[in-house]
Image (cartoon, rainbow over all chains, first blue to last red; front, side, top):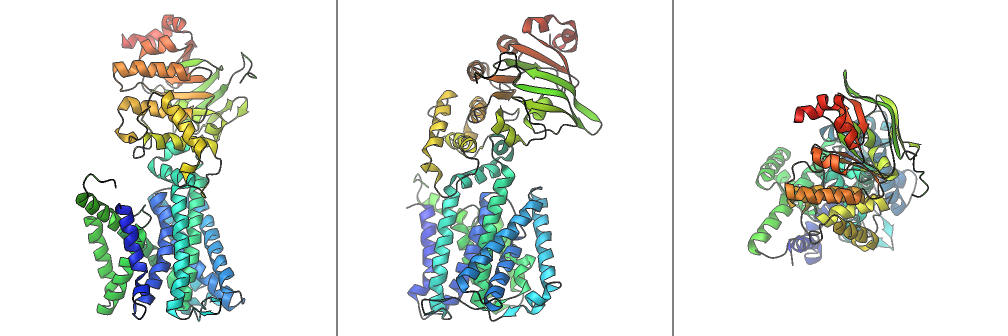
Length: 315
Length: 254
């Protein structure tokens, strides 16, 4: 046992709540947690592993949602190919973004990705209104129709989402320990040195940005099908902000941290929004306080506590 | 390697100029570096030594001139492309992956050299060849037993050695070393000089160094820079006697 495994255990417990309490009301929330986790896991490849702060991921998330909705509802595609297309389009858009944004770094990178994604947001509400339904969005987004299982039942849909979540987690885990993941960590650690030993820094950054765009596109498509709706809010910059908060709260650069961040964020959103209409502001306040108290997020806190309880043990 | 003719240059720069606004850090530098030679690059602070190195390795943009490596023009190429072409370097301010282990540092350099596209479908530990490369260089630079140490906690001298190791893994034909002895103690410096001698076997080295005794001793040829230009070049004895060098540089030191 180590801190990493403890976190894996906590994640396993959180996502298996519907298995333990099949009659409870938790299924809807856990489904949302699974979907946002796919988004956050992919986002952390860019943010936590490669060290690039993007404020434009809402674009890939939202475009994925629109892609799945339009392909299934207007073009008559099956759910799975449409979900694949959501990932492809999300990744392709991320690749396009990266060609503009990777020329600059740090704050300018964050601002450029933000500006580009807001451009998509505004276009979806105006020029592309015929396609996107404007501010009304598109209602009636379907869920998969597979093996004769009724996925409109949240309990059944849970297993579909769980399978995709596990797949997303495994792929991200593999990328992190692969040569690609190591190279990205090297770029984050020392870009000058990384380039000098022969890494094509910009190409590596573009590839991880694209991979995380695929994650965002898929998760956006899944969210649209979970809530049977897609609207421009999913493209809004605040969606990018949400995923940044989730990852920071959970612990950037860790495999399981972002998932815990998503869980806390979703639980607080659910609970606070029933208490007050100012819930988003309060959530922001809690976030600010928690980043002061635990700068490395929940993952960092767990690691710290673990080291205290198990002194001398291997972490 | 054997294909390189004795008198043919491995690295050549033609009338290169690097300017920052109105200030010309390097101006009108033309030089041919011969294969297998160790060049000592000296000159007072601000003479443009590091800028010249930056110009050769692609970190500084040329406002004029051209650079050739092995008769291939590399002007305008990015630093990583020049590394692939056979140009390695170390930096004046140590550039390592401080929070990673020494072994991980070297393995990164090995994978950067081995793979043009970085694999993402297998754990890095499964690629035995890059681990072997890293282990080999680990002993070459005299850091056996330090593989699991965090690079950032190495002594300054060992960090400098690690820097050279990182450069070696790209199997450079030309190695640019920017003050590898700066800030290291006397004992360590001796070890470092040995390392520089060793890595200069069979490759061209351009060494910036302020310790005149060391430079004069180990260099095959000395290049003296002043105010962005090459003032003089030649064998150590010739340089020592050159009156221009004495007034411009050596004289100030004594």
